Image (cartoon, rainbow, N blue to C red; front, side, top):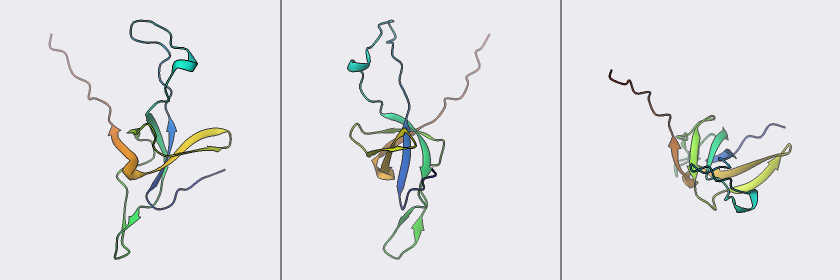
Length: 104
């Protein structure tokens, strides 16, 4: 099934976090919090202003984003869990850090 969000809504799939801490301690599933990081799967066409003009969203499919702990509505489509939220619920886009050259 293909899903297309309306207006300024975004479909996000949560990214699973590590089950082990930096110190090597394994975190059981019952103690894990839901991740607040995800990948944008689909975006709506944009929000309309008072004059009816559509303003495109700042995020696009494939972006890695951060969102609030209680943001969005959880849905299950074809057995996969997704979050549907407004673009304003997103806190920011995670960008890959540029590779730094080491000086020899």
